[in-house]
Length: 45
Image (cartoon, rainbow, N blue to C red; front, side, top):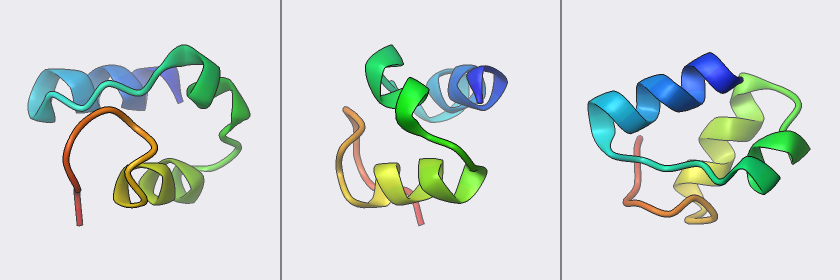
């Protein structure tokens, strides 16, 4: 999850806060977080 978070920040400018990242269990959870706007940048589809 940390590696995916770093890649999202580098490629798309999406910052996933560490407290949110700790709560995520799967890549699908991460995508849902981004699409629902809980992460601090725009939507990724």
